[in-house]
Image (cartoon, rainbow, N blue to C red; front, side, top):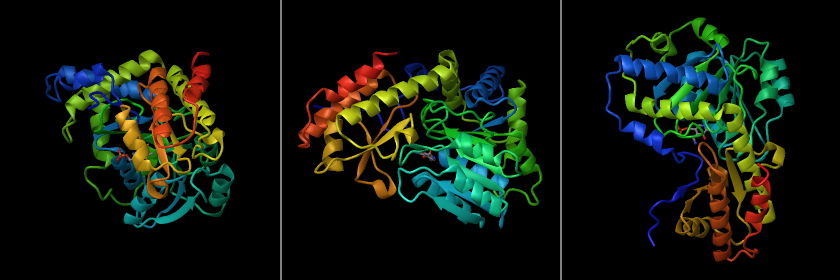
Length: 390
Ligand code: PMP
C-alpha cells in the first residue's frame, strides 16, 4: 500500500503545524509594507524569548544551518586566529572544515568514540595554555544524539575575551538552552528543526560581547552576504518598527516563522523543554525494554531532540528502514562513521506523545520482520509508563 501521510520522525526537517504551513501561502507582501514590518518585528522579539536572551541581537537570514555556522565564524575570526573546536561528532567536524577554509589556526578536540561527551576539564586545560578568539561547541550533535555540556563550558569561557559559539541547530527551542544564563555569545539554529518551520531560514543571535569582537576586527569580513555589519541596521530597523533594505527577506518564510514563534510562546519555552524531556525519556525507556542500545554512552548525555540507536546483530539498515517506511514512519540512518550502524529518530518541534508511540510500534513491528526476537508491546508499555505520569 502506498502510504499517503508518512509520519516524518527524522531529526529535521520535522513535521510542521498546519497553521505554520498555511502561513506560507498567504499573499506575499512588500518587505517594506507596514504589515510585514509588524510581523518581522514581533518575530524578532519572540525569538529573543525563545533564545532566552535579553540583549542578544537576532539575525534572520535565508539559508540553512550551515550558513549560520559559517556566519558565526567569518564575523568573529580573521585569518591566523586561534580557534578551539569541540567536537562530539559529524557537525563538530563540519566546523573544522569551515575554519580550515578561512585559514584559522584550529585546535580540534574530539571525543575518542562517538557517543562520548567533551568534558569541561579538557576545555579548561586547553584555554589555560592558549588564547583563543573563539570556542565552538555543537549543543546536540545530531549524528550521535549527545547533548553537550554547554552550561559548564560556558562557565569556563565567560570571563575571557574568547567568543563562545554554540551550534543550536538540533537543540534551540527543544533542548534546554539558555543563551544569557549559560554565557553563550553566538547561538544559532535553522528553521527546520525544533522551531518547527520548513527548511530555509538561518537564525543567529550575537551577544554584546560577540558584537564588540566584530567591531574590533582589523579587516572587513571577506563575505558580503554574511557580514553582520551589513545586516545589523536592517534587523535594528525592523525591531524598531521601520523598514530597511540590504537583501530581500524571505517574506513568506518569515510568516511561517512568526506563526511558529507565536505557538512556541503560547506553549511556553519551559513547558516545551519539559515536553521534549518527557517524550525523549519515554522513547529511551521503550528502547531499553526492547534491549536496544543508544549511541550516547551514558543516559545523562542523551539529547531530548533526537536519539541514535544501534542496530542489534542481524538487522540491516536497509531492511529496517524499508519496513519502517511500510509502517508509515520515516526515520533517519546514521551519519559519517555511524552510517549503516544506527538509526536516528527525531523527536522535536511539535512532536506529541502519540507520535513517539506510533514510532515505537513501527520499530517493534519492523524489528520483528527483520528477525529480531522481541515480545510485541514491551516498548510501548515502557513508554506508556512515562507518558501516563504527565
Ligand atoms: N549543525 C547541526 C547540529 C545539524 O544537525 C545540522 C543539520 N542536520 C547542521 C548543523 C547543518 O544544518 P543544515 O543542514 O540546515 O545546513
